[in-house]
Image (tube, rainbow, N blue to C red; front, side, top):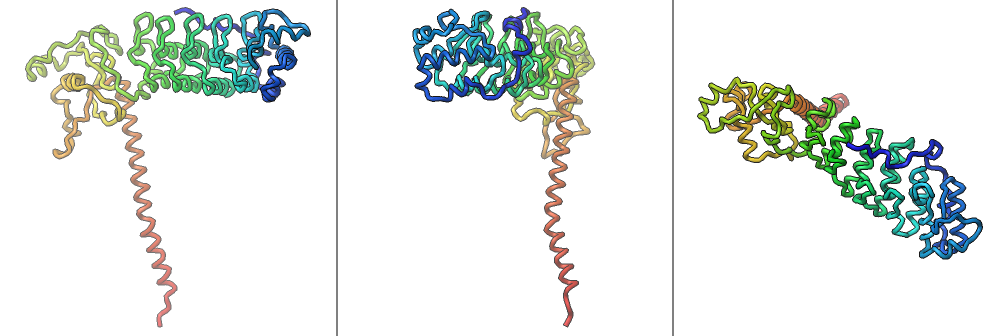
Amino acid sequence: MKDHAGFLPSYTPHEMTESPSPSPASQHARSSSLSMDDPTVQKSLFDMFNKRGYNLISPSNSMVNGNNDSFSSTASSSMSSVIGFREPLHGQTPIHIAIRRGDVHVVEALLKSGDADVLQMRDDHGNTPLHFAVGTSSRRMSVSIATRMVALLLDAGASVHAVNHKGLSPIMVHLLTVRKDDPSILAMLLKHGSNANACVDRVPLLHLAVAAKLPMFTATLIRHGAHLHATNDLGQFLREVAPMNMLVTMLAHLTSAPSFLPLDAHSQCMDCRRHIKPAKRQNLPILFRWFFFRSTSTQATHCFHCGWIYCSSCTTVQPVRDGLPSSCRRSEAEEEEDRLSRPLNKRLPLSRRPPVDMKKDVSIRVCRICANLLKERLVKAASAGARASLYRFQQQQLPSASTASASASASLHHTPR
């Protein structure tokens, strides 16, 4: 995978400050719109930007030295010449530089100008203001400031689908540059329509988050529909490259059941790496299958929860179906495959067999990770249910206790005649 993190220019530490007090530029932007047509005001803003270290040049690509003619000749709207100022090194406009420096008040002033072109301005690398805003989290800037600037741009109508000269959208830039496991900006981008299954050089965003060791990013992507079975540029699955803690985090945030991975997609167990072969015994008689294949450890099986491929030794039949998410639904073919993969004596464990009038097959075949995860979820649900029952019982006892107390008090104060 190519390194795209360097496409955004690096800057010195003094440029990466937090949002200062309201700037003169924002004070001018809050003035009447008619004043912005005045070339003198535009030149005043130009000088103020440069005094703040923006290092701008005029829209005519020539430095202005006390002459207002260039402003009046290039202005096509009230803010056109202001947003058209450029710095000479990377062609960044005032809003690019304000975002890079964390000047939130300047960003607000430029967005409130009413000029729609400010959101479409690009630097020499094709980066929009939103590209810059989502990349600020890689610099020494507080997450709150970066999140605020992204929210301002998205609320103003910035496009999450714009790509720069390297073909990178804002969500790709964010995954390539982020350093803190705070998915606030990622969640906003996904909410506004970013693609959770986008790829950078054939590497899905989910794999990028795993490589960067960002577990909360992986959870956010999974919740927004990222494919659990996506492979990287080497053809590796997440089960093969992700550490255990990140696997648990991703599987814990599954909201729907991913389809069973085709058995011919992987020739090894994803846990023990043992070579496995697809089982071809569904059409055999039941007793024949049970007698000859019940101890076959190289049988290829699926985990009912995650859909990954394991050998039969790395999966177990557990009564944890009730721990699945409510939206987790399997097709009839997948349900039948899971039922046939279970031995006859484990399809409905006798020790946990419910009453005859309440029969329910709660057993499913799951891998070790999903088994522990679903068991923990069932324990928490049972604990919460017990606490709720205790609370209801206590609430029911309160009226009777108060009645008994009132009766005792009345009997004590009763005076016989």
